Length: 204
Length: 204
DNA sequence: CGAGAACTAGACTGTATAGTCTAGTCAAAT
DNA sequence: ATTTGACTAGACTATACAGTCTAGTTCTCG
Image 1: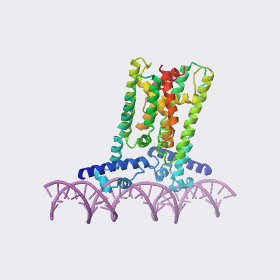
Image 2 (image 1 turned 90 degrees about the vertical axis):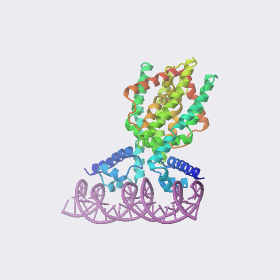
Image 3 (image 1 turned 60 degrees about the horizontal axis):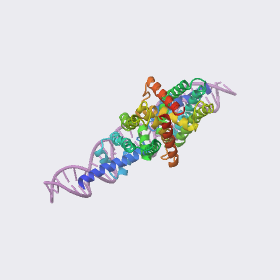
Image 4 (image 1 turned 135 degrees about the vertical axis):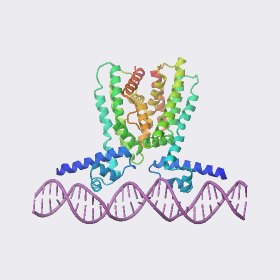
């Protein structure tokens, strides 16, 4: 278990640190807590990571891709030839469900809370996790427009409006109330359906 | 300057504390910094406020009304009989400008960052600052629908969609990048206009 | 087996902080 | 003029934390 032992410690530290950071925030977390949670001595933490700053930055930069991966997966199953109403209901619901994942909501709050202390982190999250979601979605919308199934001037603007209508309320409620699950599944169904319908109204 | 001197100190502490909290966050702020910034001894701070917790909570609860007041003011000048396009362009632009005020953005980040440490604070902000904006807007939309100028099923849902389309991108960019002014005025013009137009497309 | 690397517990340094305490200043009100 | 109450500077207590150091243990590989 030599190398794998070390790799395991490394991962244990990463996991523990992320968990504690998510729970207590950056300043509210001590290196001793991380070491204890990882079942590892503090010295070992410092062997693997230069300091608290780098540990935090490295862990959270690694989470950047989560949103992107998630959304790419959702959008992949989006180019089906069924009725637009059904397709958009499903798209909206899956999208909403994915972004309302408790884990993702907590990550989002942690990143926002430390956006000024770690500027590249906030920027990375915005660009890799946020703008790429929009361009991915805009691509799909563009294809639907080209196929004449949707009337869209600017696909990127349409994508902005779609996610805005869909996410503004539930994500903000989660951010402000600190609750992991501020809406029931049925409420999410309704929110998704309403956004999908309004979107289709606006774009034929 | 006896009573007024005391009142002035009280306000100086409030102002200084808000400024430092906005700059450094709750945990990043020390009572000594607040006292120094207020030009006041630490003992005086503790004379006026029991502890750091209450100081923070009291100050930020007092800001709850800011959004609401702002939006009420905007919506008041909304019931004019001009062309809908102009009216909505103006509404959207003013709304966007108000919510992208640097001061308001910083407040929002501070509240979100401490939503789990001060749960009633987050809830208050959401309910008094957030939901009331939406119901205020929904009222106006409802009147336009009753007058036959707009086709709206549920005014509250329409209001959600309107602010979502308008604010999702710019507010999130501000939250993640930590920047006070992530968009130029011209970009804000475009964002406002695009949202207003899509909204009108969806609702006749 | 023996060497070297990873690891451990925990002491240690230096700094920061919330909140208290003391001794004394200052300004107005009686 | 004395009292009263707000105020001040700064010392003080108790705690916490980042990061280092030491001395000793365990694991693995040659």
